[in-house]
Image (tube, rainbow, N blue to C red; front, top):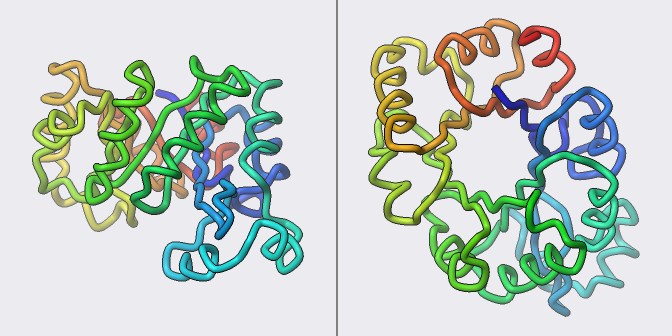
Length: 229
């Protein structure tokens, strides 16, 4: 099972920051998920502001940097990842052709094609379609939040190599364990990997291990590593 650091492992360091990415790597993460948006002047930045993203689109990169010096440009982040072995999971936070174009251009610029994957909610599946057109070999993953949707069907619609589910507290889903196990097995039999998150307690991490998921998404890589070893 591979461990993916959610926003760089926000339980151990500030989310979507170089400090978090470095910490996640030191803790033993196999991959790091991070969020990307575009500024007013079409610069890709690494930040997670789903409910206030309109603010980002109204500010230029220079204005945003002046307002929040901790925000990083995607170029700086990908340049950092050139020196690591982690897989980078890029999540575009809005449906946007320019954003997908910028992401793929940056991945190519830093020669990270072999270690980068796109991840997107099914509701934003147009991003995956755009990515497939521009970079057919780029692995794409779809997020389908609950165990009650057709994972195989959704993966097929967007030609996803992995389905991520459970973006909430796991105790809510444990009563549906048999159904979840069945869906995981079906996906894996069809060559589709399954990732689940976000698991931040020892109980939930052990539960996902027992379920046999391929990727575990967590805010605390160190805890997951200690339990899974």
